[in-house]
Length: 382
Image 1 (cartoon, rainbow, N blue to C red):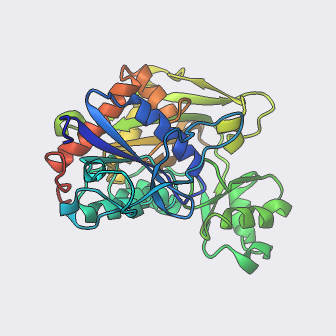
Image 2 (image 1 turned 30 degrees about the horizontal axis):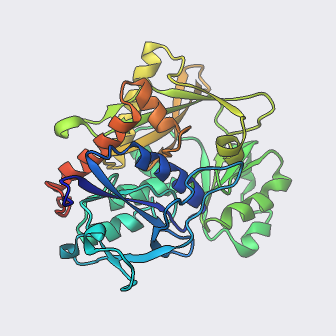
């Protein structure tokens, strides 16, 4: 605890992934929601080149007229590997920052994408003995990798869309017209979505409506991640559902689901549609029957448990009709650190479920501390 008796929370944001800017926006919302009477916030930015800094006051953490925020300068810090260090070390001895400001009780890693949401930072925090919000190393890594997400969910009986995984998809493979066999193309059909296996926010994704477009789409995805997933289009409504760790060690809890609807003229839910354009409408909660709502909530909790998630997750689905005419729910992705921007679905779904943004953030911090036993202790071993 800080000298004021408040819990000191290090909110870590930015990072080296292509989702750097969205992480900054999410962090701004999280920090604004932490009750200053209960929490002392230590903002920690990670620049695109991997430098950790205590940002200068007034750091922009919102999208301003289409301009995306970015971590730039600040006082250089580093995570202390020794659990007795309790957090951060200032790398600039002349900086006017006392040791107390670098001792933290819990970390809220509001990081999206590689080097943050994929188990890397989680492993670093485990080594440092710091409690943190969200899933551990395994669940973070498995959920970030679309290939292994699909495998683990399929092993738990949750339906997946048809797909093909391309490894080492850069270089000559991009230009190989036979990178997919004729049988693969016939099975997948058109359109297909070509995605980096380990990325989010629709970065690097291309909708392919003609196989002539395929090599360029693979190259675009491979520029983000050398492993590429080619997914068959799954017709249906886009439904999302939030999951939180149960209270007092109980089973996970699911929010009311929400639906994403594209406005006329918007082809699919890409990065611009998500963050830069007025291209989508959100139904929060979704217009579902009671039976459909239960089905989505139950599948969300099953996915959360199948991937060994902790703290929170957002599960994305397609709800449609299968070849046999029966209603079909297909899991698209699982996000262990979903967006926390003002328009993000995760906090909006929980607000519709009776858990407002400040209470949501408070519950996540409390869950992280409960797993650790008390502020400052290492997380309990898995």
